[in-house]
Image (cartoon, rainbow, N blue to C red):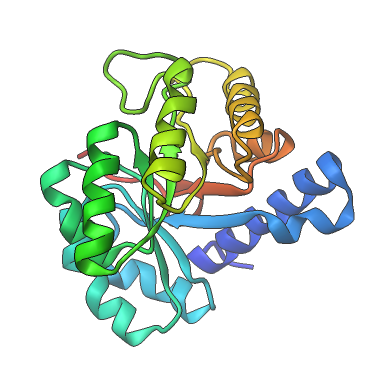
Length: 226
Ligand SMILES: *Cc1c(COP(=O)(O)O)cnc(C)c1O
């Protein structure tokens, strides 16, 4: 098979399947969702995946997604778009209109804004709380010890559809302890979904219970530096 986005997509699916089988038995591959991270890639690069039947995509910048996705969503029914990058409160209205889920809820103020928008727009994208498992100063995400309180606020007090947790482990550290920590915090909060694992570590993430992996360059090829 020649090296195309479709063949790379198939290879990633196969690797997820293998890791999931090792982790939990034959049927679990079906429950791991592969989010193709299309940030920086053009509509032309994305369309072959849509033509191949893939529907789950992730973008990290609302403004870029706004340019690219409305026409693609109109042409290809069933697309599910995830916001996987930081969300400024003043961009939240735009985000709930475009994204089917937001994986970067990381502070009380954003939870309150999303609750208000749920009323005003009648739009309730699924939410993941992003946890800064490495407690890195420059990184988005709520601190591990503040996660339970944010989940309680968003889900229990404000009634938002919080479905899981998301993390991005620190660069250059073994990711496994971060995946294990995220799984532990999710379990004690009764959250079923774990968005973890990127091109370099998604197989490890699946072994640690990822239900959603976010894979960009392993499917689309290397990104230009931005
Ligand atoms: C870019 C990005 C990814 C995908 O990264 P790759 O290494 O290309 O697979 C996953 N998650 C987030 C939050 C990202 O910003």
